[in-house]
Image 1 (cartoon, one colour):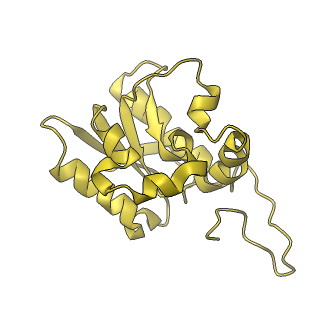
Image 2 (cartoon, rainbow, N blue to C red):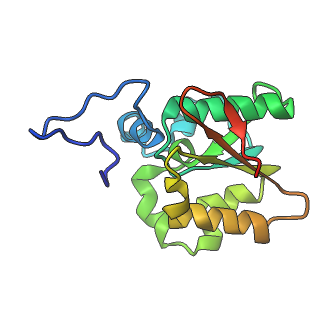
Length: 172
């Protein structure tokens, strides 16, 4: 559904989400938004012990199973030999959703993505199993920016996870 909640069953009762079915959008809607409502802050501002600049920006559409999303990032850390405390910028956790109207009114160049984009070593696109990523204008904009407007040397990695398999980088 558009609000990111669990789809309704035939009798309009919410569908129970499990770790095997919970998406990044579900985590955002049912954890990040309620937890940050009172302070109107991002989840990172609420839980991080101190501010840290992101090292990698994660581009995703939110449709991926959250456990798969995490597995892709863990595999990326392993593949790159990065320390466990590597900082990722993930919109679901980095954005101030309760003040999103103000950020949405800004030009794309001033968006939170664009601001984070200027700080990172690279971008990781996490692709959901259905490829919904490629139908989302914001995801396509992020890939376009990464490939055309990024500084020389900006890395771009694409990860996905197939059911019953380990996360892996995409290799054509």
